[in-house]
Image 1 (tube, rainbow, N blue to C red):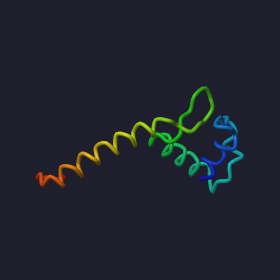
Image 2: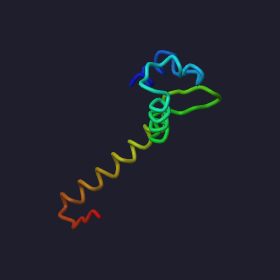
Image 3: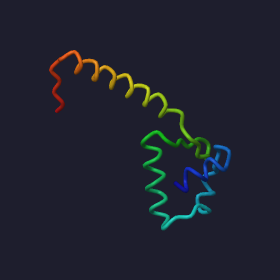
Image 4: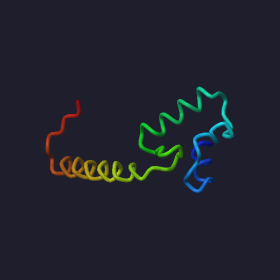
Length: 83
């Protein structure tokens, strides 16, 4: 959460060199958290700056659409099998 707050506090442009200023238990933990945030589309890094990603908005829109389709199919009595 400290990483996200630091990005927000930096007006959505946290220089990657400033990661050392973020409270953390270890540099390995920071690296792991940053990787998780980036791999899940929450944070992007461009030209040496971290920023909040807008990509997740599109992903969540797709999830919403697919969930509605699933719910509608179930309500119509369609046989659904999740593997």
